Image (tube, rainbow, N blue to C red; front, side):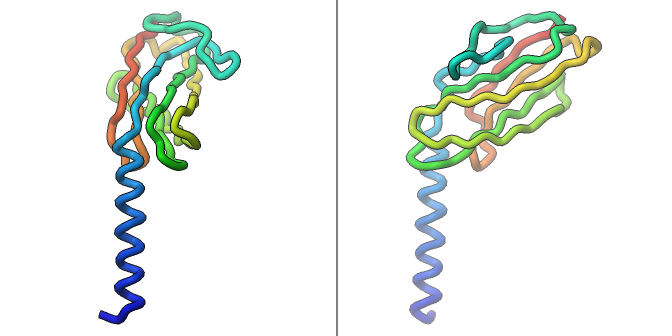
Length: 130
């Protein structure tokens, strides 16, 4: 194998292993549904809420990134995916959030699944709308 091809293969493998290690270390240490975000923090913790409220936020505090990466918030109503929001993670202790607007007829069981950059589930945040 020519030297330049071997070098390229080695660089690809190193980059892949660094990316894999970063994602494997991510942890959601705080994950809540909230009615608002103030100063990069949730103002409350929602487990059950009125379906006619209109909009809620999913706040997550992520620990463990060893470089820039991303997480994805996937919003499910019952078993139907209704939204997917990819968010940057730019430090080892990072706060981020997504939001979802609701219609009154969407009462029932909800959850937000948090995925790492490789698509592995790192947290599930359930809530319900009445």
